Length: 91
Image (cartoon, rainbow, N blue to C red; front, top):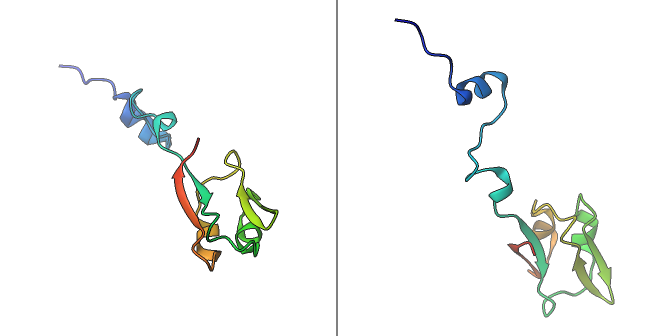
């Protein structure tokens, strides 16, 4: 009896490349972005200064999030003293 060739998942694991099925691929994962609760935002800019992606700017005394830049790291959440940030599925 001969041995079977290694499965693709084991082969990928061997080289350190993750293996995803078509239904579970990374493109199907939910992506979350910061959203400003305007009633709570005081426009202090702490979130904008803390954001490593520069996805937040203060405009007209309110924080604004550019969802295309936000990677959902939640750093801004830790720096908002007013609880004016939440995370939602990106548009």
